[in-house]
Length: 252
Image 1 (cartoon, rainbow, N blue to C red):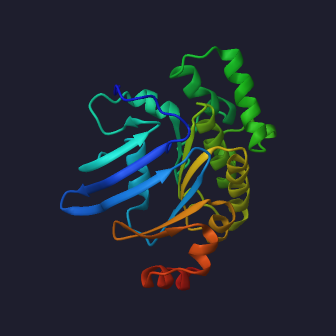
Image 2 (cartoon, one colour; image 1 turned 180 degrees about the vertical axis):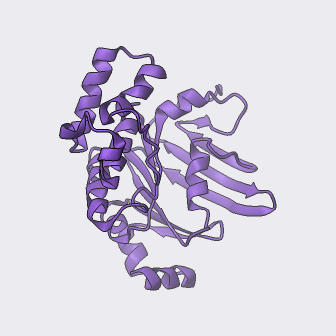
Image 3 (cartoon, rainbow, N blue to C red; image 1 turned 90 degrees about the vertical axis):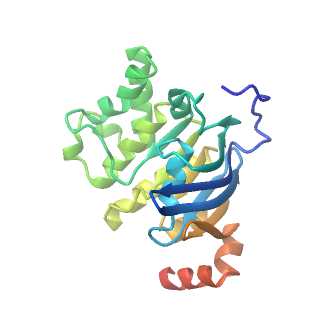
């Protein structure tokens, strides 16, 4: 761990400085700078292949970076001294694919990480898992297996599973992309409730109406750079860059 002064909530909870990331000769992120304060909801939008998913995967060290700095609660993420387990306790992540264990019930899926990783006792873990399933409106599905649940229900179990680790920050990577329109609303409502409770949320999303409604700040990425960013009302109603205007005209 670094010996710098401890992080305090008046500083960014996540800070990216001049971040570069390449896969071989393909440069995916080209000098990204973002500061996110505790309790903020940030939406990252942009065309496919613009580096959005790579960006959030760099925040929790799923991807390494070639250059720059990413700090979470003051701790440099891309360093040999990083304790990845400690980082993953702070950051929950929900993916486009739910990645649930098919042979475990919804309740067992939510309980697994606290039991195996945090070594918590079974009774308190089960109590919290039941509370979390109720929170995502799945109290009646505790004993259901993933194959018996709709896509939206599986995604909400995945959200409850991430919350079971009691993270400070939640990352959502296109979590509604694989869902049919009926179930998208259920998942977005769950995220909206988390945001309203003050959870720091960073979302890669194509859901523009949702982004306008819940985001404190929107970042538009294209070809690995942040083209434009701002509060939703400014961003959607008064975009300045031609690339942003073109993108919004195609999807709104």
